[in-house]
Image (cartoon, rainbow, N blue to C red; front, top):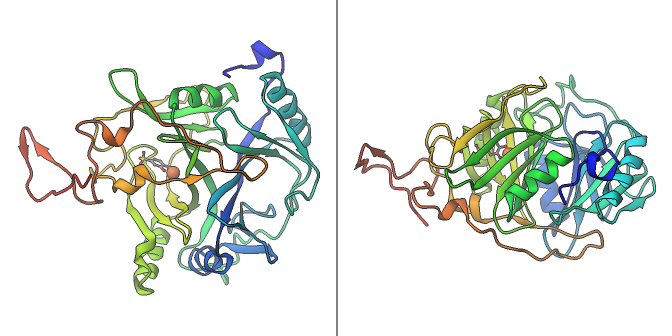
Length: 359
Ligand SMILES: O=S(=O)(O)c1ccc(O)c(O)c1
Ligand SMILES: [Fe+2]
């Protein structure tokens, strides 16, 4: 549904930002090593079934929940709204566009107050919350910062078969559009949408969906991303690095993609840009521009296009997938291959040392 306040009379909830995600993981100890020992996230609370994590700038109870389960999946994406009254607004808005809502009591998720949950029109389990337990903000606890200090959760990236429909849904929720990847046949391959004043809180990646593409955390500086790569090499755990480090075309951010022990994709991301003025222009990239995904023209490793995490509905059942009409990685001329190699051409001459094209 693409309803907006004008068609249902109920305005959308006032979303501030992406708030937290819950990932279902099959080995809590292995995940604890990845997110705490390697990435340095802070444990706010933990029990036999779940670990509640936050990053150094965050004072809410958590921005990531790892919950033990039988198969890897996205348990929930949660957006923080501007007040508890906006949780009620979410309930009215979604009921007004024919989406079932489920109100959960404070403590349904440890550290989070009363909230409203939906399976959104794209098939994703989504929660809208405001009240949350405050905890110590470790911004200046340099005695605890590692070389790769992660400052905060930055965004969700979701795989959807119909990017245009997803784009309409999120703009209907009042999200701005910072960047898109399009072609000259009116296909939209990807879009980046925001409520906080940076490039995105959610990004849409065309592909079989609903699936989670990644959860992204931000660091303050590039050297913290490079330190994570060096630590993974030193530990001989370099297989956790999937793509990058590098510079994105879209968003201009410096990035690294990791795969956690269950294969969930985690991006570490820094230095995108401000989008807070009302007339912030949308940047449109051609799908044929080899700098869109990597500003340096690096190909995109095939798994980055093909792999994603399945999602649960509100009762923990895996949501079935549907396929898109066209996949970016299958377009002719799109560069797909291991990072650093690509089918590069100078005019009509292929540059031999760029291998690329592994698909
Ligand atoms: O690879 S892209 O430049 O399209 C890109 C830009 C921003 C992101 O957060 C991302 O995951 C991917
Ligand atoms: Fe991202």
